[in-house]
Length: 242
Image 1 (cartoon, rainbow, N blue to C red):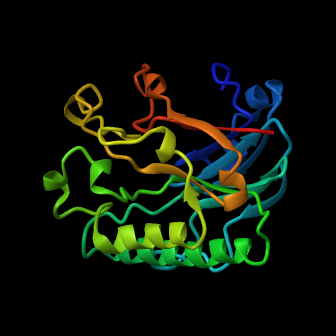
Image 2: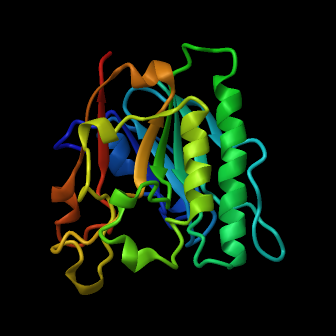
């Protein structure tokens, strides 16, 4: 955050209840923080130094999961300056044929409905859907498609759900500045996959037309992924004009 002078940070898989957040350090840096988490699983957050208001925990129609069914902390929205920012942690899906994949597809479909509603009738809407989508939408977004032939994240239904949101009016604002192949945001810790660049591109910022027009640059911070104790995901950073 200090190296890149981040104005708005979205976080996913925070694995913390709202009362467990170490807010003092962030607040001392000038950030306001909104969090959404219930336990050691899932969890999302937004930190902003340009204001934060209209906080929304979950989107309308967001499905539940489990037995008994519960709401998971996977979507958090807030207005930061003039942008409606969403921190999204799309369900993993686990395996082809697993009920969790059905949940993932339903979650993406309902997000698509909500996202279209946010755009409807407002061509100047500033919206950024940012986070871990757990979908590699193109073949070039994995290091070797042969290794994923029977895996989630690349299946036709998952890719179709992702592309449906794009086609409803949202643009992938990072890919034009970080074209592939061989450009990834996630590398498993297994067998030095980061060092060998055997990764996946799973993290995206999808912007409304008005937001996409303001984007001036984007990059993936591989240096952060290379650090000691780093997440297996690298930050995706987007610059916009005022």
